[in-house]
Image (cartoon, rainbow, N blue to C red; front, side, top):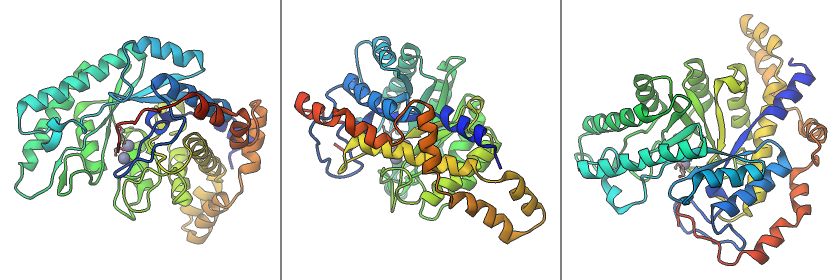
Length: 388
Ligand code: AOS
Ligand code: ZN
Ligand code: ZN
């Protein structure tokens, strides 16, 4: 059993990255229901992110999305973030919304389109230089809808060529995080469909190329915690895009659909040393809050990750290892379930109070009146790109 002081220390030092696009009007695939008071620009997104950090104490990093967060002065945006106790996190490239990308971006059959996509990726690295971001997050919607549409292997060659060019552009302290997704928007093949494809490309590229596990990007029933354990062991787990799914890439609040799966994932993270900052695992949210209030939904998501982490930290590693070594199936399972069935809300309330925070982040946020103020002040919130 991890001693309580160590559990508390780990919970206090955990960092969860929130996505800029979750603060704006966004949805996954269909109608985006605009909400009053949403940010009108990246600066107001940071104002809202500061409220999440103020309430939770573990969400000081905000991921950006280009072009949705395009500004003239990225260093200035980083300064604006710093004034609010925030830092800018991963830069998310977007090569999935231009008409030119109908047949793909970096894997497109037309070299001119591939060049356009690569130029965008290089622009994102330049933005990382300005913001001081460590991570470039790459998700490719690239794929095909029909057998015969394009050469599957040739598309892998094109992908490798682009990834290699970006990898060579990265600074010593920068990384590229390659995200996979089983399907959507392509329906027959996706050029980076699974963890194996992402892993193979990252292995060839080198240590600065890592895999992102988006929890909504697998076939139903996939054992995600196995993927996490494997990638951690290979030191190729760059991070997570946390969200929940019932059927596809639903981008719902992480932990809302299957808190047991989130616990099992965090158990492998804890066991594999993934909570140690040195392993560089980024715990990012990647969610869209289409029908629910955005800031409270992000706060709830952060709390859900904290609860799963706390439970994972409470696993009696010694007893578990002994039961496993002894082949005691029921005891080993019982050790894990004991931790999962522990109500960790009192522990987290205590941790927050020790951090000088309100024990209930949602109550703390509600008391600020921020939700009411932004509706009054922000008329005409921007329509974000994703799912708009
Ligand atoms: C898309 O489905 C992926 O989850 C992306 O990671 C994410 O939605 C995108 O990065 C936002 O631009
Ligand atoms: Zn994602
Ligand atoms: Zn996704």
